[in-house]
Length: 305
Image 1 (cartoon, one colour):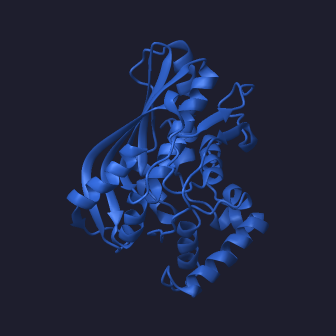
Image 2: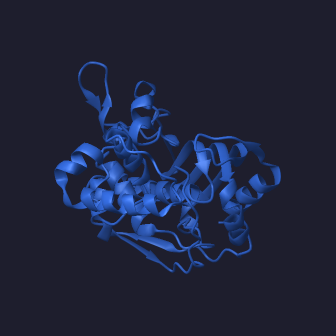
C-alpha cells in the first residue's frame, strides 16, 4: 500500500487550499492514479485497521440495487447514516445541529435505531435516492424500462471480453439533484473492465476522493468487486487501477494523516472467496475471508457531511 501513502504525502506537499460543500476546507490535487496487481495480495490498507465487514456489506448492497440504508443499519454498518438523517431533520422542520455536537450524535443514534426497527419509517426516511446501487442495476432506459449494467457486464465478459465498452456508470446526469437530496452524487462515478491474457482488470474514475476516510474503502471495495467478477466469469485477476479527479485531505484530518504516514506498511493479506458462488448476485458476507491481515489500530476522524 505504499502508493496510497505516497498519494497522501503528495496531497500534503503539493495540495492547494480549496473550499468545499461541507465548509470544512481541503488540501487538494487534481488528476492522480495508483494501481495494484491483485495477484500480489489484497490491497487492504495496513497502516490503519479497515472496517472490512462494512466494505463487504456496502458492496453487496450496491450489487442488489438497493438505495435504502435499512439493510446496512440492520447489519450495523453506519457509513451512510448522516446524509438521510440530515434530510430527515429538514423534512420534519427541525434545525440541523453541529455534526460534532452531542445533540447530533444522540439524534443520529435515535434515527438509526428507528430505521433498524421500524420498516415503514425506514421506507420513508432511509431512502438515499437513485444512488450507486440504483444506477448499477436500474438505470432508466428512456423507454419506460431499465438497464441492469452489472448483468450486462457479466454477459459481455463471458461473450465478448475484448469489448471496449465494458463500463458501469453511476453518473446519471438527470438524477444528480435527486441523489443530492438525502445522499451524495456519486464520488466513484464510473468503472471499466478490461481483459487480456485471461486476466480481468478494472479501472475506476473517482471524481472526488476523501483520501483519509474514503479512499481505503474504495480501493478495497473495487478490488473485491474485480475478484468477484473474475470468479463468476472464469477469469484470473489482473490489476485494479484507481484514477482520481479531485483528491483531497480535509483540513480536520491533517493530524490523522500525519499519524498514518508515520507507520510502515505491512505485508498485504490474502482474500479468500467461496469458489462455489457462480453468480455475482449470490454472494453473502460469509463467502469472504481475509487471511493474514495484521493492521495498525484504526484511526478515527470526523466525516464531512
